[in-house]
Image (cartoon, rainbow, N blue to C red):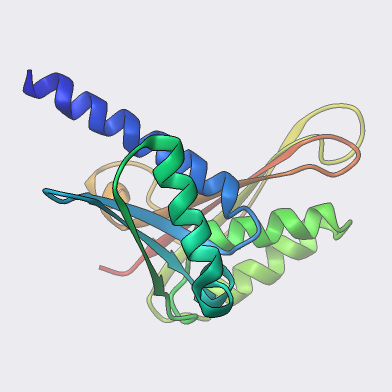
Length: 185
């Protein structure tokens, strides 16, 4: 019985997360936390620009809350928390790179710019950006750019490597962008 309850909660969390990703596609958010309380579900959205999600006098957040209540038939409470710009957020970096590719910017220059920007932070040991897809020409290929030191496996990699990914859709075809950042422990 308890197992099925946990499975149902996990499925609901994933559906709500996917729905929020689609709804907040243009807003720059890093993460969504979902907490099950006895009477409600509290969803916390972490972003660098909370004003875009909240909207003027809270209109956007109310509309989003009502849509979630109607679609999933749950009592939900949405919170928006601001992230400091000094904190390196791989998900936001990946989205920025994907938008740059869609705006016809060179992927090598984008990677170099963002790697330099990431490595300026003193809490970062290494960073890696991977492009995969139709970068140029008719064949798919994978380009990898990195600076510093990066853990690939093990407990340290699970704990201290932050990951983000996004997909760019230029006219040529889809290009996947993965960003990995190794934070000091």
